[in-house]
Amino acid sequence: MDAARLVAESERVMRGAPRPEDVVEEAWQAAGLVEAVTRLLAPAEEPWQGRAAPLAATGAGPPRAARLTAVRDPVGTLRALRVLLGEINHALVALTCAVQDEGAYWSCVEALDTVDEAREQVRALAAGGAGAGGPRGPGGPGGPGAAGTAGGESSCGV
Image (cartoon, rainbow, N blue to C red):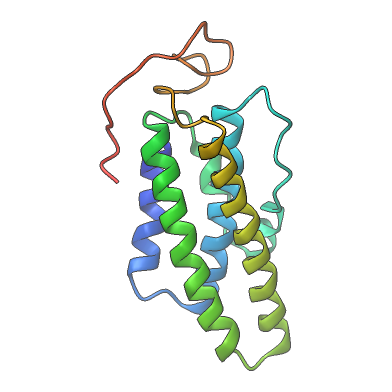
């Protein structure tokens, strides 16, 4: 599945009326997606050691990023990820200020740290030109093992 579609799934959750646990889950989902996009866009770089692993502890099921197969519009995907991570960050800050339970507070703080790290990774990818090529995916143009990158029109519409 293309990265833009996976970002759109998170955007739908965040645009609805997410419960506090949904916001925390989306933080981990987004961080996992950033890790997966990084592997596709910058396979030669040292892998980013994000902290998306705690997603399993939330009971959220398998990470959405496991369905990632391609990044058809790298520039648009990185832009959409920046916006999504900003929305999640704002929601987490509000949530952190409102929670009464200490466990929920620390869960929000951990999710905020993870979102911050993911935002930095997206900035690094964009600054490093990882989003300048065309579509990328395993075995596809511009993906790992491909001879080069092909240009293309944006198909994600985000």
